[in-house]
Image (cartoon, rainbow, N blue to C red; front, side):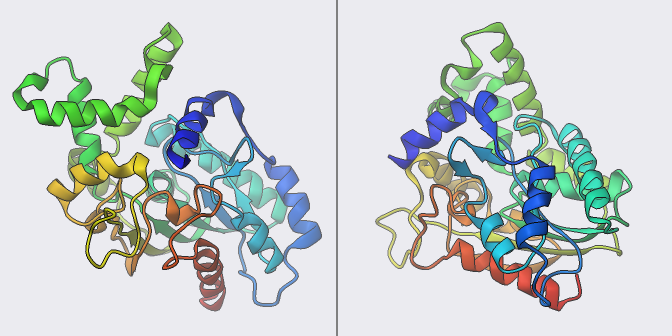
Length: 318
C-alpha cells in the first residue's frame, strides 16, 4: 500500500505540492516557537531532496518534524525548490528562500538540515554561491556526497549512444526502476521536457560528476559546521536485519547492494559520509524522514532523531 501511495503522490507532485508559505511558517514560529531557552541561536531549515516537496496533499516531507520542533521551542522553516531541478537551479532557489527567512527573522545565519540531494544543494550554496557567512551548520541525512551508482546507470540507460542490450539483466532492472516514473515522462511533449530536466538532475548525482567535478569544485568552508548520517536497510529474509527496505526501494536496493555495499535503498553508506560522520541509522531512504505517515521500524524513531539533532545544534551554540 505504501508503494502505491508513493507512486501516486510522485505522479501528482508537479500539480499538487503545497503547504505553508515561508511567511505563514514565520507566523507559526512567532506564535508557538522560540519560547525555549534551549533553542538554537539560528533558525532551522528543513530542506528536501530530488522529487521532494514541502507538503504534498496531506503528507509532509519531513513528517511532523516542523510541528514537533516548534513545540520544543525551535524556529523552523521548510523550504521548497523545484522537485526536478538540477543542483544549480535548486541551490539558487534555496538561497533566495534563505534570504527571505533571514530578513523575516532578523538573524544573520541559519542551520540547514538536509535530506538526500538537499545536502548537495546546500554544499553548493555555501561554497560556490557565497553563502558561507549565512549558514552556521549543515546536517546531512542520506546525502549522496560521492554520488549514487543508481544515477550512473539511469543516465547511461537513457543515453541513446548506449547499447543496453550488452547487459540485458541491468537493462531489465533499470526499466523496473524507472517504471515508477510511469507515463509522467512519456505521454506528452511537456513531460518529455520534464524528463530532460530530471535526467540533468540525476546526472548531478552520478558518481562520476561528484568525483570529477562537484567535490573538487566545492570545498567545505571552515566557517560552517558539517555533519552527516547514513541509513542502512535490508531485505525481509536478511538474518539480523533491523529495518526492512520499503517495496518501492527494493530494486534500487538490490542494485546498490551488488555494486556499492550496504545502503539505504538509494545511497550507499560510504557515499553518505561527509564532514563529522555521526553514524549509521537503521532506516531506509524514505523512513529516515518518516515517509509514509511516520511509519518506521522499531529501531528508528525519526521524530526523536531530528529533535535530538536540533537540541545538539543548540548545545553547540548554533
